[in-house]
Length: 158
Image 1 (cartoon, rainbow, N blue to C red):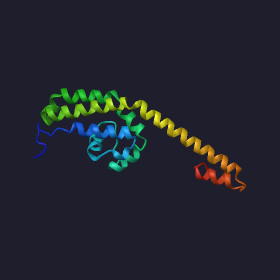
Image 2 (image 1 turned 90 degrees about the vertical axis):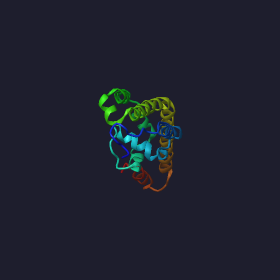
Image 3 (image 1 turned 120 degrees about the horizontal axis):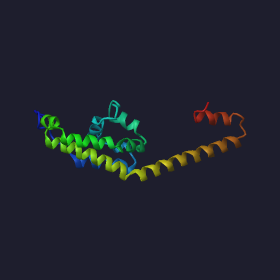
Image 4 (image 1 turned 45 degrees about the horizontal axis):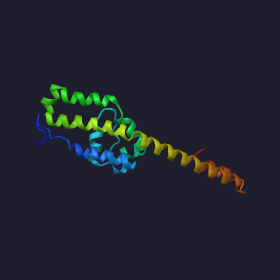
């Protein structure tokens, strides 16, 4: 039996934290792998998105994931994982320690990549707005009287 009471297999801390760091470093949620997804989905505060791909769709903006992980309650959960006697009895000390280490690591990564991801999101937003302005100017200059209406439909305002 793989998960016998008090002897659950510890998580691979380095692998899970390394994968989440890769997601933050690249800003690419599609780099999130199944083990990291499974761990995150079991944490409180995350809702089931049916599978890894649904989660990636929900967090296509990596800054949203980073914000969700930058939470002191996760640190409180980590402390509980290591100090709750029932948890140790049910799962085992090594399992609980690995779980707590990952939770602390996720919060640390979220805080480490805060400036980078916020800056990237700001730049993406500026680029989108600039592109929309260019398209609006082009639609205004277009001799076709329906060009402005077509542009507004294209961006979802009509």
